Amino acid sequence: MTNGPDSAATGLAGTYRPALWLPGPHLPTVWGRLGRRRDLVAYRREALETPDGDELLVDHVEPGSKAARRLVIFHGLEGSSYSTYIQGMVPLFLAAGWNVSVMNCRGCARVPGSLDTHIPNRRPRLYHSGETEDPGFVLRTLRAREPGPLAALGVSLGGNALLKLLGETGREAPVDAAVSISVPYDLGAGDRALRSLMGRQYVKSF
Image (cartoon, rainbow, N blue to C red; front, side):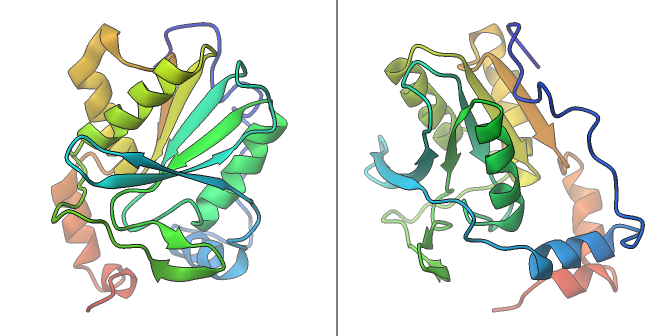
């Protein structure tokens, strides 16, 4: 989706090539978690007060001016701004001239320096694949604050929520461009995959 000439994927489209030594869907997933670093990006953290009295922790990287274009990234299920795929994408967009912000869903933000420690939210409310109030709130806040182009990128569950937000807002969407990656739009099929023999390897029981 794009409402203007700028696209978050400009200069990046068509460059992906899967590694020959990591065939199939599972080996790249495991390699990404075990073989990639989660401390590549140094953020400036901002706590945005939500209308219901909670807070959303948004992590920013801003090498450009306040008038520069900005990309807002929405992570996947139980991810954060320190997820390996987020850490891998942010430098690419910085090099392409974007300021980058990552919204941490409620209860998903990690403590810098202790990346496996979650920061709890205040209110008894979490997030889900159809929850669009928090992403919309963050995008509208940044849109009102800065004059430059604003784009959004959602991965997995974050991509699902982003697409739903775009459908709800239509031409009034608070972004100029949007991209979704690996969206679980069929949640029933995703649930069945997680219940399979291989899928259960990705599920942690508490």
